[in-house]
Length: 182
Image 1 (spheres, helix red, strand yellow):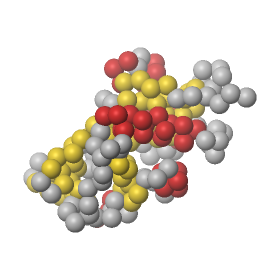
Image 2 (tube, helix red, strand yellow):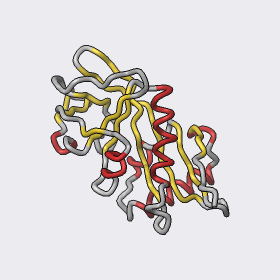
Image 3 (cartoon, helix red, strand yellow):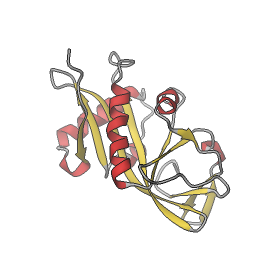
């Protein structure tokens, strides 16, 4: 049996019906713990969508561009958002297919990848070579830098092709956005 493949599509190419379908999948997968701000964070980049043989959406993830300051440099980061696999289709490799598609985008367009992992998702990312960021994290908010100790230990990074990761001697400072800072 042929395994379903991921279709890549930028947000602007998604129809209103597709966006609603993605949001419904994320609401179900996160059991109601997927806020409007989380949805907003998942938009504006490139989506990986996997459908079953009947055309039903069964897996999703997106990568959006964020800026991160480290020491004296600004990095273009491919930040992974909204990775989910529909219940009943989990543990079959769909998450790996979604991540492979998103990692392709990161390798082609970003200095490195980053994401904030749930306890349920951490094993997937670690198995794919993502590493916990070993240094401090901050977010650049309207009032300056805000330490993010609660995100330390759950923020993963991955080098993109040809770009080494920055070292942990300096904090990684992400751009601020509405809702949770990361």
